[in-house]
Amino acid sequence: MFSFLDMINSSLSYFNLDAKLKARIYIGIASAGDIYLVYVTFRLFANQVWLRGFLYCLAMVAITYFLYLNFVYYFLGKTSQFDFISPRFAKITGQKFDSNGKRVGSGRAAQAGPVIANQSNGLFSGDNTIPAVVAIDDYEQHNLQRVVDQLLTNGIFVNDYNGMDEAQIVAQYNETGKPVQALNAHSVPPYFELEHDRLRHRLEIYIGINQMERRAVGHIVRIGLTDVHSAHQKYQIYLAGLAVTAGPHKIAGRRGSTILITADYRLNAQVAYRERNEEE
Image 1 (cartoon, rainbow, N blue to C red):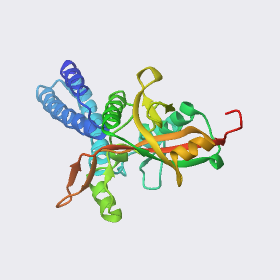
Image 2 (spheres, helix red, strand yellow):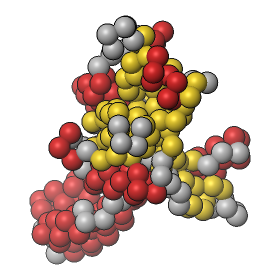
Image 3 (cartoon, one colour):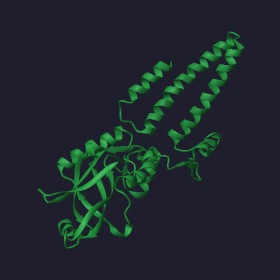
Image 4 (spheres, helix red, strand yellow):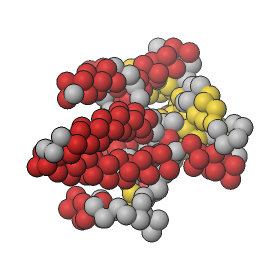
């Protein structure tokens, strides 16, 4: 049985499934195993194998309890009033829950994003940073898609709609009128840099899982309200922050369902600047 479960786990690893969908699949598999365990327990009691039947019964009750907790969390999007284990486990691991019992900051991207951003390009003063407008041509979009796919495969980026289930996605869409992105917020690549392309006379953005595998994914066309060429002549420009946004998203469909729509990824960039001196 364990070999069978290991085979399923290895098979699912070939697919880029978000954490919630994979958890639901595991719940279904575990439920089938639990039903079989109920049958085995019943047969042991019927054959008067009391000790082994009692041990199997304890295991069945424990597995059923955890299946119930996971079903409520991953299918209904909330925690059960009979969940007595998670709060105690949270004290040990440092995991926090909000007033509704939902986990706070449980997504890997939400936790790792700001940390990665600080480690990638250092810390900049907010007074010296400004948003930049990034343009992406077809070649850069192809590169951006490849890098995002690589980061998703390596678990650095996460496609789980910020932990929302179908009902929550529909509710947020109806409230805001905006699609819910599959890619989690704060999806900051582990490596990014800005380079002056002298041949094409533009500031090119490179990202990647590391410097060795970096790719050109966009170029800055405007800094604040200033054209990038004018800004580059007057200031030294540095890439202070970068996040990948947009991409595949969901909108509300009929009868509480959602519709998945494919779209290109975009980049949100913050640049730092410093006035050039006469020597530069």
